[in-house]
Amino acid sequence: MTNAPSDGSRRQACAGAIVFDDARRLLVIRRGQEPSIGLWSVPGGRCEPGETAADACVREVAEETGMVVRVVRHAGTVHRPGPGGVRYDIDDYVCELVDGALTAGDDALEARWVSAGELGGLGVVPGLVECLTEWDAMPS
Image 1 (cartoon, rainbow, N blue to C red):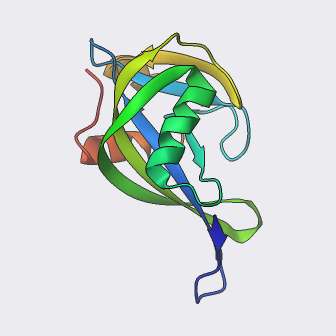
Image 2 (cartoon, rainbow, N blue to C red):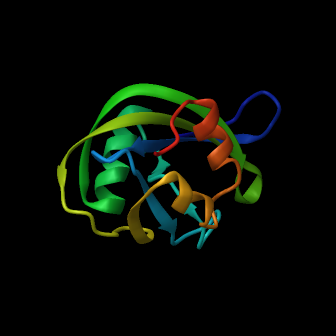
């Protein structure tokens, strides 16, 4: 859903998923579309009309990684600039892995599990490591 706040900017509701495997490695995708094409991030994307951010989170994980998850808790919210003056309001959720076979899909070029050391060596979207750290959601 895109709406226009009083300052004239347009906002787009989005969701992201923080998912860990049994070894507490983080699920990440390499973005296949702007913004931040080619960079690594947690799975996520835009909310569809009438869709809650939590529901969008679950849907986006399935579309981008083939994994089925369940939302456990809200981790935090970030605001990022987008094309054409749009501001993305991204609600991120810690999710529990339910099922699935990892495979990149939709607009994800790649999908994989990473440790904290591996995450530090990837080209990640701006602010990802800082947010994960602040939310106590870094992988092992």
